[in-house]
Length: 190
Figure 1 (cartoon, rainbow, N blue to C red):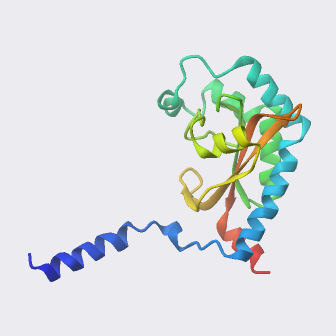
Figure 2: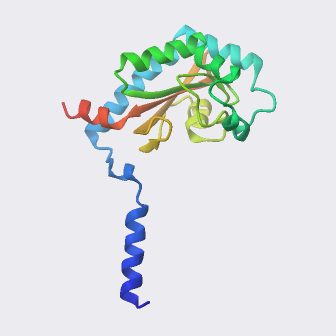
Figure 3: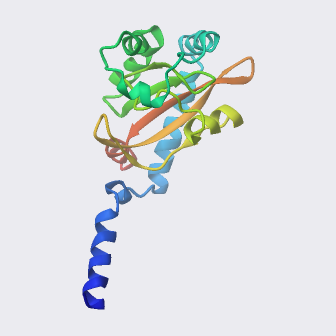
């Protein structure tokens, strides 16, 4: 293969390897909308139903023997999954999605060990301790914002934001929300 062919092949692979979300530029207007939604999410994290769910989960701790690989093997119909998807905090989170006209695509609530306390639908991972979306809000008390990405279960491009759930002036858990970028761009363009 000559150097010209190798060069074109390398360029083609590089172009094909660029993820689709790379087209999402976080413009100042879009960032302003994201920041506005972070403040909304902070308000949800302060709701008694959310705090109560995290405090209850923290008393129980993570499910014995469940790691992320075993979690992935659980079916959505499993009683454990159904319980986390139907408790009072989960109902509250689902209402937020419904009210937003699906601007919010996924919401999940983590206890102190990064384990799930509630969610709008089954998550890919059970434990998020060790990931920035959990560690930053839990250890610093500050909000975290991810990069644009494809949310596999919902097949939407979103940006995740997370905030601490606080009780007695200290983080006790983390609330993570996926914000639909297409809908957010429309809001930013107004």
